[in-house]
Image (cartoon, rainbow, N blue to C red; front, side, top):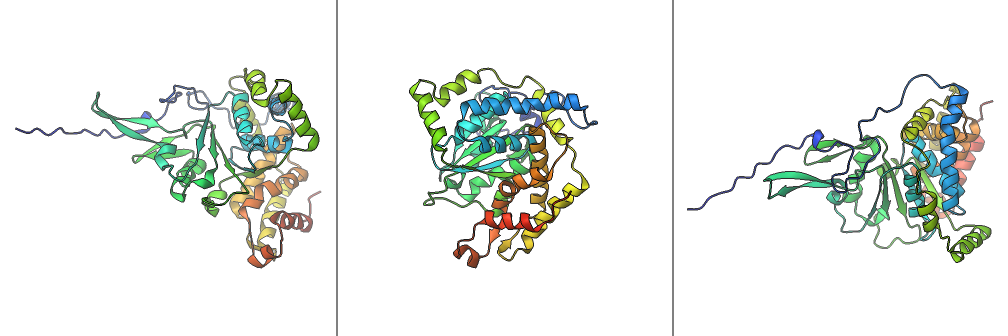
Length: 365
């Protein structure tokens, strides 16, 4: 007589996915421990605001001790964190892209995961999946590396569109769907995706919809001569950046709860009507420039506003200045705009167009 084993497939609920630990490695993940999150409320006094935002300055100083000659990249990474966005990092190999993200995660006591994107990477390798446990006769969740605070998507353009799209829901909605169950991610969730600008064979260009999800595009170029000499001296003296990371950031820069306070303070930075109107005019001007085929959309407007707030908090200011908007216009807008083919053939660069737009739009006084 033959018998048939009946598999009972329980429906996975959100409770199966939430919690303060990663079930694969039992690491604590910021924002999933049931801790009350700071937010809302009135703007703190100037003294309290300065005390909170000084944490960003301490992180910046700590990262500068580990990463030599990439101060602009450090500032943009911090802006990405404070604004609650994601960043696309572009640079040749060996300029410290992975080190930057790893150091930032360690400075704020966040969990860090790295995925090497390859042509055979599947969406389940990113999000996770449910597997049948023969011992319990039940399905259990194996969470993917996306359940973290800082996710490094290394060489994201080497994976096909199907796998790239696994990040879309997570980046925009702070949630993923696995086996028809929607699972919340940490409130502190930042994707840093890297691209190599010189190798295009065997790559899959990011679609415009996905590029628009990145708050900023960070260029990490070769260091200046003095910075490269300093780096060589450090390594020769047995003080390589990786060692400095292990030693200087053995203890996180921020204590428990400080990051949440810093994020809440950033959200309270004042943006005047004149500044918000200036940001809107900049975005609209990109759509009218004769060299532009596709200009910056409304999401770009909101991204520039959020990033400007974050930069003001990084500079320990309670209000946004036009200079903040100008400084961030290129990193926020360039990956969201497309030039007309005839202007591309003439060698026009998108940053030149953004500079022209900044010149054309009146700056509020």
